[in-house]
Length: 183
Image (cartoon, rainbow, N blue to C red; front, side, top):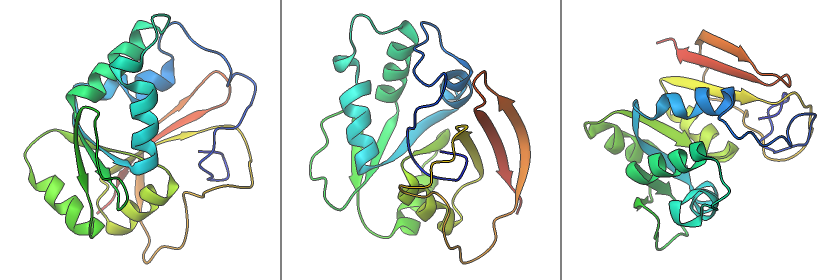
């Protein structure tokens, strides 16, 4: 997200650099999760974008190995798409779920397994926050004040108190913030 909380992919110095090796963003946000998580919940648009770009079948021979590793991780996970419009999913081990978000999240959490990752845009993340489902947050903040687009933070029914676990500063001023929920 941008510094002012928007879900956007703005340009800033360093945002256009493609690394042949995984950078700290990839390590912190994904590679370190490969052994910890086995379920990923997507919104429809996020799922379709990931399927188009990150499926093993769509990888280019010039892609670095860590992107192939990411694709293989995604394809071995249980992928859940929350959508009222998607009728068919053809990528990986995917299940489409509709209905009350709180009930869906309870059902997913009741299945034994590893950690669950929410990979979606601001609307999905905001809705998940309102359910109280999240135990922790990993937030990637880009050094940009953007001022437009979908916003991650909106009106909340109650306060969510967090405890800072770690902060990682990346080379171009990005931050990776890791919080746990205080309950």
